[in-house]
Length: 347
Image 1: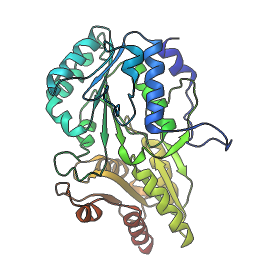
Image 2 (image 1 turned 30 degrees about the vertical axis):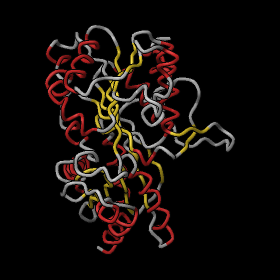
Image 3 (image 1 turned 45 degrees about the vertical axis):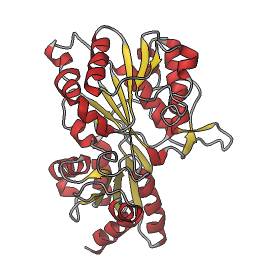
């Protein structure tokens, strides 16, 4: 079955939970591994490469043992040469293959910025759409391990800035599978960012392949007093904050964009129109980041709806710390969202 057929048949976005309590639930790594296996079996043009995709942990379990089933010609480890290997991926993509390139952390993507920004993102435009670059780059963000300033950055704001790139950030296993299928089918370079702290969360995932269209956000929780837009793992923190705020009489609505480029502006603006208040909870630095861009869009297109200034809950503008104590102070949580909501409601 062609990838485009799968994309056409699944236009409606799905929710992370299924009404049947006995429905099959998977973690994000399990959903990704299943999708990759199905993709490799269906399309001989797909191959997977990256540092550690064939090691005993299989990229947090996402590529575990795929090299044993599909061979080391299609699932293989790569040298510590990110720019060169990304160039190979770009070359393979424009030659008709469909590479999926795994990175342990987006910090290493900085070494491949020339290929991603100057080549992969530009070729379709430069050749008037006649040339496609079906390259999917998967990277994992998230705190932990005391990885510190050079191995714990998110950096997706850099890619949101670049025309020609898709930027995908699922918050559930259901969305991880559906958006990965859409990424493979899209034909354009896709940056697919996952968060480690979501890896233990389970959600309903159909066994068959399905696609979630880009640019379609979800209302994860309905409310009328304040809108909370959560990015990636911050959707979880936003839902936790909303539950606690409800106990104090504040009815919060939680929006999950799911993709940052393209971004579902309409779902955010419609929510702000209803609540008049907006909090953006991001898992990256606030300056020139995704949260700042969303705030700018609302200021430009929804200013008349706002009853109070927009609040941003994000990383402080300092390098990522290593120690556990400093990590606790550095990373925002539901408590920061709750504090922001109370400040907005007092105005």
